[in-house]
Amino acid sequence: RLLCLLEQCLIASPISGGRMMSNTSLSGKVAIVTASTDGIGLAAAQALGKRGAHVVVSSRRQANVDKAVSLLRNENIEVIGTTCNVGNREDRERLVNMAVEQCGGIDILVSNAAVNPFFGNILESTDEVWSKILDVNVKAAFLLTKQVFPHMVKRGGGSVVFVSSVAGYQPMQGLGPYSVSKTALLGLTQALAPELAQSNIRVNCVAPGIIKTRFSAALWQSEEVANEFLKLLSIKRLGMPEDIGGVITFLCSEDASYITGETITVTGGMNCRL
Ligand SMILES: NC(=O)c1ccc[n+]([C@@H]2O[C@H](COP(=O)([O-])OP(=O)(O)OC[C@H]3O[C@@H](n4cnc5c(N)ncnc54)[C@H](O)[C@@H]3O)[C@@H](O)[C@H]2O)c1
Image (tube, rainbow, N blue to C red):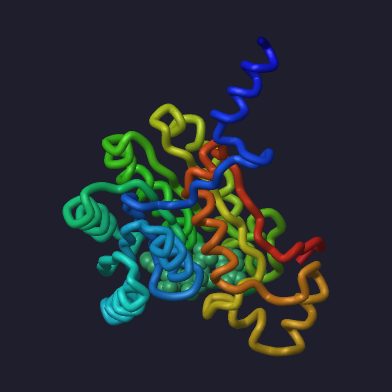
């Protein structure tokens, strides 16, 4: 009789051939992605949209927003867009209100915007540099999470993803304040996760290595410099924005429903001090 019951359980179980059925569809979900008209943000918007999410793109310039919206619409992605300087409260409010009014709610936040106005010895960095970096890279990520929180609660849960950096684990030479801001995001992820889990909201983070975007051009434009970085990697190519977009989308999907407070490094196996 026991064998018979076991057999029935196995037949009824969603586990087949030892593997859970995958559920990466984001159909019916609304996703806000900041700084999403280029680079990693655009790739994240694209990957989320391809899995069925209604995407809200934003960046500081209207012309860039218009370009991204038409690019994504041409790929049959459901998308709207607005300008948003994440350091500005009114702009963040407009972004959140637009998602709620035009898409019906918010399920996903990808906080991707970052600045780096300084390169050099850390002791030469000024008060203004620190204010700008911490305001945009850290404070805005927290404040936007706080602003979307009540809307995610209304939907019964949600998912937040911060975009940190491998420099958050090991400060990059010349990029002290920026690196510290990325370390802060690792902490912010862990500080928020237990509290937001009570509302069925997961908070995770990705830490990219060197990804070919405008932001990191100084690290790959010269073949000589790029080759030095390649020596540090197990996978002998630089990362592409899509390499990060896919991981962000995984973290937002049901496949990651038991993951919170974590940071996934996506570096091609970078295994040295930078
Ligand atoms: N490219 C890399 O190698 C790399 C590595 C690790 C982490 N990252 C992180 O990935 C994220 C995306 O960077 P990217 O490489 O795609 O470059 P990117 O230049 O395409 O993205 C950064 C974007 O942030 C925007 N931004 C800056 N200040 C803003 C503000 N106040 N409000 C709104 N937007 C603002 C910029 O306009 C820019 O579009 C950043 O958080 C960056 O720190 C990038």
